[in-house]
Length: 68
Image (cartoon, rainbow, N blue to C red; front, side, top):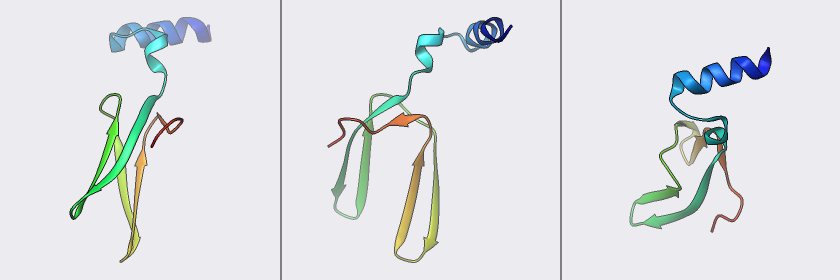
C-alpha cells in the first residue's frame, strides 16, 4: 500500500520516485555584500535571523556532500 501511494504521488507530481533524491549543494561564496548559494537545481528554503549577526538558511531536501 505504501509503494502504491508513493507511485501515485510521483505520478501526480509528474516525476518518478528517483526524482525524489536530494538536490546537491555545489558551493557557497561571498560576492561583495551577497552570499551566493549554488545547487544542482532550484531548492526551497527558509531564512531565520536568530540575532542581528546570524543568518540561518535552511535548504529543504538538499545534500551538502562534496560542496566547496
